[in-house]
Amino acid sequence: MAESEAETPSTPGEFESKYFEYNGVRLPPFCRGKMEEIANFPVRDSDVWIVTYPKSGTGLLQEVVYLVSQGADPDEIGLMNIDEQLPVLEYPQPGLDIIKVIYMARNPKDLVVSYYQFHRSLRTMSYRGTFQEFCRRFMNDKLGYGSWFEHVQEFWEHHMDANVLFLKYEDMHKDLATMVEQLVRFLGVSYDKAQLESMVEHCHQLIDQCCNAEALPVGRGRVGLWKDIFTVSMNEKFDLVYKQKMGKCDLTFDFYL
Image: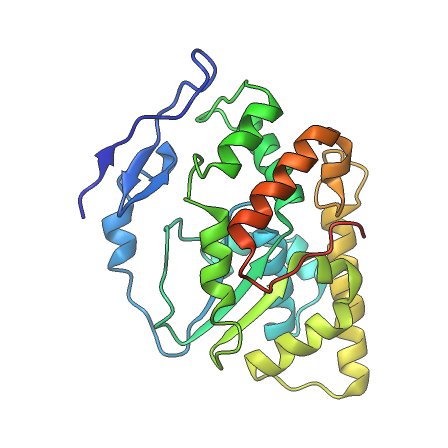
């Protein structure tokens, strides 16, 4: 399907760049001109795909997967461009007919805060509206990459499939050892007990470097980030929309780590 212009849902004068639409999904301007090429990207039987909605801990998951799959060291990752090892394809829906999919979901309240901060920092989007307005856009599925609610539920419906590993961002902070064990089994790599313990410690170091370093933006990667910006009324409204859109889904998130 050819790309077409779509009206950018914006506060006048605040959201200057226009989204465009591809296959019914609204995408930001830096994706323009790349969709047909990505759609024809050659897929190998040995590929492992990492799939997330934006701001779900994608970069961190890339590094953890590389660590586990290669038996690498966190210091080694710090010296490389991880995107060269695990290329990122900005595409609205890769499908589930590929061999292995690692999907990670993040609790939507933290995600929308991180997404808001990202839009404010990105020159091509130049968002200068309020967080309240941005959050309304998110709840009404009026941001790039389509509806978070539909995206996460579509993959949750397949979380028991043999070729899908469904992870939650919060488990990186709550139960990392179990997540690493899941990745080891899913990726088909082999570790003895001592090696597994060492790998979990390496992943702890990596997450600490990515989420807790003093030089990083305040709150980056923190669970419970939403509590610093949501008002009581916003939280009540969000909970209502969440219940309406996720009411039939048994996927749960930990919002209060």
